[in-house]
Amino acid sequence: MDSGESLGAEREPLDEDDHDLLTFGEVGERLRIEIANAKTQLDDARTSGDGDAIDKASVRLEALLDAASRNSAGTLNDANFEKFFGYPGTAKRSTDDRPSEA
Image (cartoon, rainbow, N blue to C red; front, side):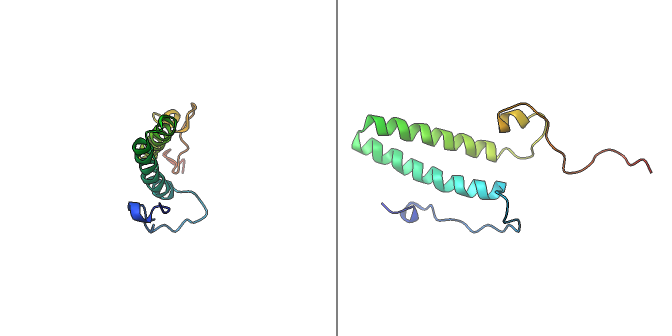
């Protein structure tokens, strides 16, 4: 089977102007493609009846779906920081909410 063209896993163009960072949009697009491929691998493993391949494909698909869920979590804040990154901390603020002292 080819690398995804027949699976509907073609890469969607992203309208992003920050090309030197792995943005949420880019991660989401890469995950979408990998999830489509992982589903195909799981289907192929089930068709072949290869238990080991089924187990490996199932674990990979589950991990990708979990990653996609974390990626789509929305705004990062103190409440979801640890769930997103896997360790405790506080979310870095992109704006300063403190009133100015002027």
